[in-house]
Length: 639
Image (cartoon, rainbow, N blue to C red):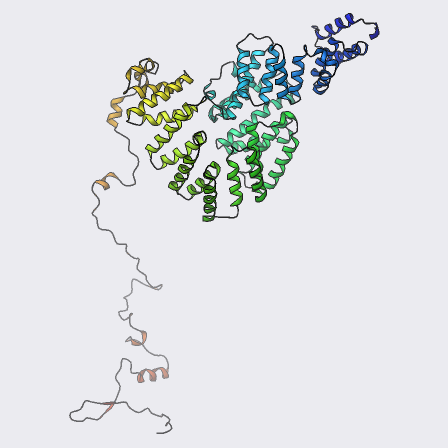
């Protein structure tokens, strides 16, 4: 039947039947074809326009769908196509416009909330994403598998919150058994642990992700391989962070970053591959520089745009790669430019300092860094660089003085960063300065407790440090810290133990409700023979000298080492040693000169033998010796 024979009512019925077909999956191409035929005869037909938009969206023709909605005819369906327009804006990389459009809607449906959460996700407003997802999870589900999608998206939002530095109590959230049955949810849970620095738990969850991936049977081999690529990328990162370089290299060699279709994932995989290759002997920094820039230039789609925390890292990588190939001026310029974009990122000044000291060594590097630190007293990157150089030279005290000066110049929000506090604490502990450790942790914990999202790891370290004090005020303060930790996570048994230890001697009445929840001591020591341990004594570490030597030092005389006698090569122990062996040969009794002339010379010699002399004896005088004249001597002139 020709399209011209349809009436508007019959066209509406046909479109409705095409859209709601139950016998088979609707064919978007056929629906689009019929909708266009209707619009040719009935221009501006609302149902035909709406059907056309939905068909275009199903065909991933988002730009064409948006053109229809933005056209003059499309204004007629503006009120009924709020969801479709918001979806188009989000898919076209316009998340802020999508949020603004949803806010104008008279009512927010469940579908609009899902799209709004996705838009906030791209806007990096992860707190709002978590809030919307929590509202959706608390209300009845409407779509198939919506509960699984919500768990997946919630875990993804948690991971991004942690990566963005807003961990809060995310790290203490337990992974539900339902999450461990879904591949995507388990992978996102692993990402949460990675972002929180808990690589041991992340490794376990990544292994579980692989097992769940193997059980996927509703995808083609190519699609299934694509699902595994993010898992391998994270496994490489975890292996590098945990020092398992061989494993990281093996995984990096198996995964070809160039074949990854997801542009955003390809960038991350390339950076991880460069990090692995940089640890090898045959690392080529020029090839790494080229590969990095080619990958960045190829990532042009809206979905490939990095999040803010990723962009900061990529900017640092860009400057460092330039520095590695000797482009010191370019590296310094990049570091300066990026620092204006990310003023809170202190590493750019450290990169700039490295570029300025690239051709310097030893004391020259220290002098240059000291000048830079003096000129920029609040720059964390420069200060940490100077700390590192002084630590390399064994100057721990000098490193501490640099950090103390930095802490004095910084505002609390910056100086009480967990990493910076941890560095100073470690240096204090290296010198055994427990009072200083307790003081800095106390100051940091007091500030963090006044913030909306305190750092639980730092609070736990501060509470533990105060437990070592004998001051009742410190113990009470430790109890308050552990109480706040327990309020954040009621299942935190470490916090319960901390409360009991804090108030046991100061306020015993506060531990009655908590002490009973801890494992009884009798159960902890069951099977341990205390008497046997006491009789065995305390194990002593091995010593270089025995205990007897320490109690009664040896009085034995030191043995002199006998020198081995040096004997001639022809020595015969059976023969008598010549007693005249110490005399010169000519002085020995058995010496016989060879030849006639030799005998004459020997007889005329005065050494060791008598000489005939002529003497004139005179009374009262000594005997004067007159040597005998030489025979045959030639008369000299003048005689």
